[in-house]
Figure 1: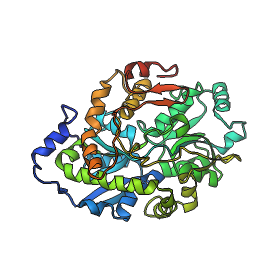
Figure 2: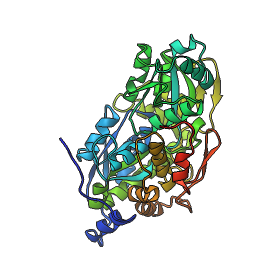
Figure 3: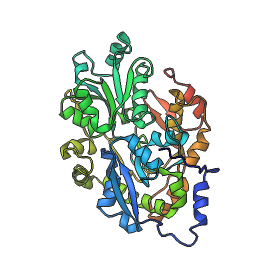
Figure 4: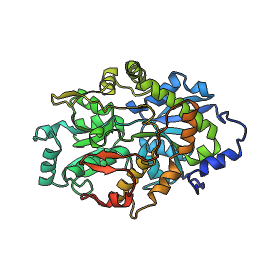
Length: 401
């Protein structure tokens, strides 16, 4: 079954402008029930909490969380309209919008769900070979190129990009020095146990789960690569925003309330307990709560508190859909050959990231909005990124396709 949208926005505010024509004089949500897909990961928390704590009902909607087995299932159900919106990988939204490796549909990012909270783990058998960090891994792989397999969760997703970036930092080319496979998040630890792969990048709690099961150990968190990086987003089709703008706005407002609730440290233990349920993440609450509260261990004896643990609100800095965040994923698509030519980076980000709708939702509930639609970040290796020259940035990497 092929489902392709014919709608193509011609300007940054095209979706909002087209939507407004049929909704003059009414702010009421067009839909009551809103089906929101999610993958069983710690960072699905705001979808679950918005529903369980009834933040959604304040804005005239009812979020119906719909658990999904894989990111490809999320993609297909968004493209075909079976889901209204979803907890999605940032890069996946951009990949679908561009039709990279599969179905094309014009897409929208309504807000960023979280920063940080992902990880890179190695299978236990590599410890027996003296590998406990990136430098040792690079020596092993350079001695036996092509012999090792690593997993991510989706080809244009965040986990693929974090894994590639981290490997490349140590001089490992993920396209030629190793093999890569795609594995659903919940299956990572099990695959490491049967030695079908040598390492993986995934969201929590599945890195922590691998440590508990003694099948893997941690070598990096995603915040080691990019502190306060964009991760999951509230994604949907552009068509959904055009047809149901008030519903989309209400959905963002409910998710913002949930994000504020979760980011209160006093609530985190309760949130961990709620999302641990079999209907949601289906993992022991202790496995979720540790890294959710910033308490990390690597499975090799090291323990620490990470101040850059997973964040959902952070005074409104997390949920704002910065244009530069979306553009960064495009630079990595170009770096790794997923795009053959440089796209119009800024125009694509304007098409996808619903800045105006987000500002309407945020202003309606007094959530602060950053002054700038771009932000400056410094990634591993002191590589600064601010979106000012994406073409040059994409071409600047020594290790690339």
